[in-house]
Amino acid sequence: NAGVTQTPKFQVLKTGQSMTLQCAQDMNHEYMSWYRQDPGMGLRLIHYSVGAGITDQGEVPNGYNVSRSTTEDFPLRLLSAAPSQTSVYFCASSLTGNRLSGANVLTFGAGSRLTVL
Amino acid sequence: KQEVTQIPAALSVPEGENLVLNCSFTDSAIYNLQWFRQDPGKGLTSLLLIQSSQREQTSGRLNASLDKSSGRSTLYIAASQPGDSATYLCAVTGANSKLTFGKGITLSVRP
Image (cartoon, rainbow over the protein chains, first blue to last red):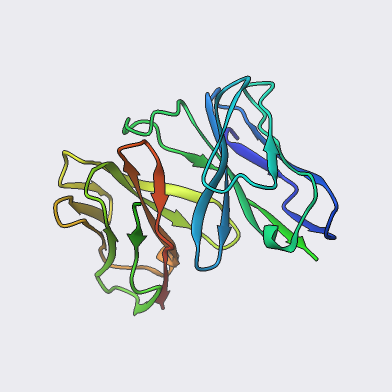
């Protein structure tokens, strides 16, 4: 089925470890993004990309790196995990980054639940 | 800074009841407003999108209205069913194309 695929679904890390959350979409979407969802905080944008080779920071980028070498993939890297990064992470994509277009609705992945001890 | 508020945080109703979920936002300079549904352990699914020039959108038993000047939107669910149990989030697109989410309302529909 077409959509946004995130792996892994669950991950436990120790403080200081590094890891990569994978995100892939097969809808030929130009725009991809990463959000984190925390209790009482709502969804917050971490990083986004409007096309291959182009990335930019969102609201809470510190501690995270991204790259966009292909249209399909947008991995999120934690270089040195901290307990404050315990969260549920969502990857979302849309045809373009034009949020003003009513046809440009975000498609979300199922999420990756990360716990940092 | 745009803030989106959804109150109450949780709601429990008996099956068959018509219900209204509220969303308010502080900056009325928005381009559109969306309602999403999130099931436990899953991602968000878009339900309805209302452009700033529109007053309402309908899809099946769902009707979303927008009053931009007062900074309010409502999601009306007719004849609620247990399958409607989920968290409902609203999000607004502001003048800088930034999407700001509310924290959501967790709805439980009792059989």
